[in-house]
Length: 106
Image (cartoon, rainbow, N blue to C red; front, side, top):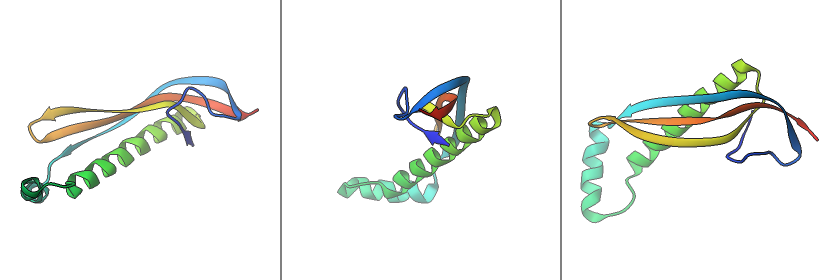
């Protein structure tokens, strides 16, 4: 599966548009990570626990989007994007979406 955040893939042409595909995950903060983040905020620097949490969330949401595209018969997703939103205090959604297409080499 080719996933890009552009309108086209160099060397390929779109032969069929299949529609919007998406994947998401909702994650809550981890108490242990919150304590570490609070301590880290005193001295400054990267909040590694949250960086890791966001990376895992992006991977899971992307995998779910790809699974949906495969079920539709796509071999590529164009214009892939991410967005986030707060669901409740301490929990956020990471949403990945794009356009499922069938491409072939030019």
